[in-house]
Length: 191
Image 1 (cartoon, rainbow, N blue to C red):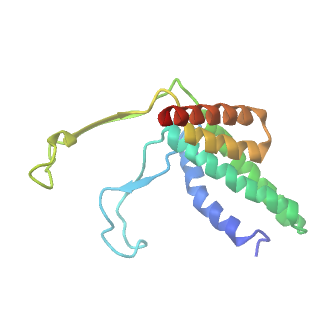
Image 2 (cartoon, rainbow, N blue to C red):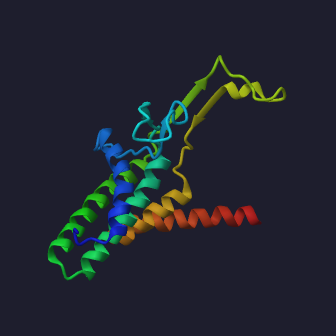
C-alpha cells in the first residue's frame, strides 16, 4: 500500500531494530550492537506472552561494520527503487529511507574504523559447572579484547556497500586498502 516493494519494507523492518539500537547509544558515536540476548530460553512458547527482559549485546567495531554494510545495502535498494518507480510519492519515500540508512551506515562505519577504541570484557563465574568431568574449568574465566586493527572482511563489505551507495571516494579508498590487505594476508597464508 505504500508504493515501496514489500522486500524493501521487510528488510527495513529487520534493519530498523539495529538502527534504533545505534540511536539508543549516543547517536553521534555510531556504534551498533548486532545481537539481543535474554537470561534464558523463552519461558513461554508465544513470544508475545513471554515477558522476560531482553538485553542489547555489546557494541563492537566489528558489529558496527557489519551493520554499516547491511544498512548501506538496504539504502542501495531504496535508491534503485526510487530510480525505477513512476510513483513520485514512493520515489520520495524511498529516497528519504535510503538517506536515513546511509547516514546511519556512515556513522557505524566511522565507529568501526576507529583505532583509539578497543572494546573488551572480562567474565568470571563462581558457579561454573562443567557439563562433563573432563571439561576445562578455565572456561569459567573469559576475557576478550577487539583486535587493534578493524577486521578486514568487515571493512571490505562495509566500504564496498557504502561506496556503491554513495560514490564517496573515502569508501573507495577504504575498499582498496582493505581488499589489498585481505588479499595479501591470504596470499601469505597460501605461500
